[in-house]
Image (cartoon, rainbow, N blue to C red):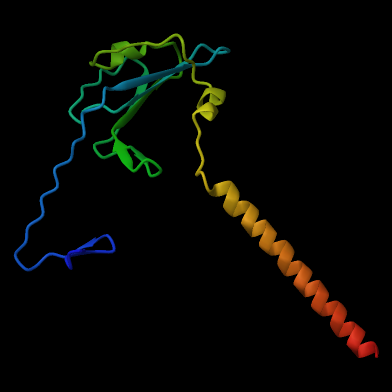
Length: 157
């Protein structure tokens, strides 16, 4: 038997009921992405998932963009994180020197769009719905063509 308070996935509370939601989100490790131009040798550093109280050292001649509000808002994954960007238009900079957090560089992965494409996943029913829409359009065109043909044939008689 279904409780009248829980029907169709909806919860109904009476007056005076308080709801507490305790999230089980662990603090993510800060990530540092270093992109270097092979032609000019200039470096851009993107710092993500860090604590809002993180400390940045601004190197000489470098530009640092860091906002007090959330910078990265990923609506697909319904998550937000802090982010900061550092670059220098004159010389090469080292990202780990600017960010006062543990830094784990990875030489195995480069910033390559083809690597990102491999992890891209679509909705499982997306192809089915696309084919269904195409099929319905073809059926609609056939019905319109048949009706037009029959109307012209009746007029000619």
